[in-house]
Length: 205
Image 1 (cartoon, rainbow, N blue to C red):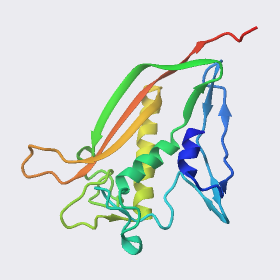
Image 2 (image 1 turned 120 degrees about the vertical axis):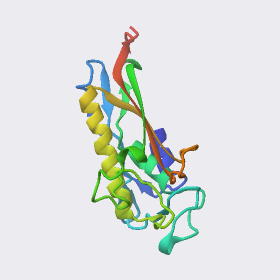
Image 3 (image 1 turned 90 degrees about the vertical axis):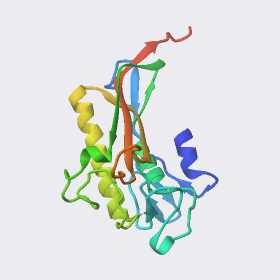
Image 4 (image 1 turned 90 degrees about the horizontal axis):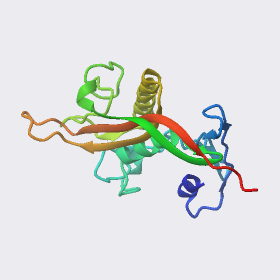
């Protein structure tokens, strides 16, 4: 509910929340899938994807670009991508007890580790965004959805490989210092995988 409230803010015209419960994770736990759609007036929006007005500068809180320049300053493509990835990750809760994670694996990967591996990537054949001095630093909705699909597919493959669940994710925009020639600004992805457990708390009589 907190995530839903953060999406709607003070706009009371937004309604219709859809979610699924899956009790197959553990006997006394439930996997709660995130919002799949919301309705704002007559427009059905999907908070899990980038829409037709999502033209964003890459970082530094520069807001939207192209026809939407100067809008939403303080946000940028990196912040929006981080939010979209998190909205696609299921939220885990225990139906009767407290959730905890074990056997956690933490990974850190930057765009440099994905160079020239995705020939259909929007920029520089790189699977994660990597800026160059002469590239267009305004990312389009199609660019952003391409990167979103790649990131979700990538962390999903790690879930399968390690037989664990994604429990945390963060995407930041940064530089690698002390490298010559200077490395262009890039995305750095952090995520944690782990096993999900519940402590059983008996119901009161």
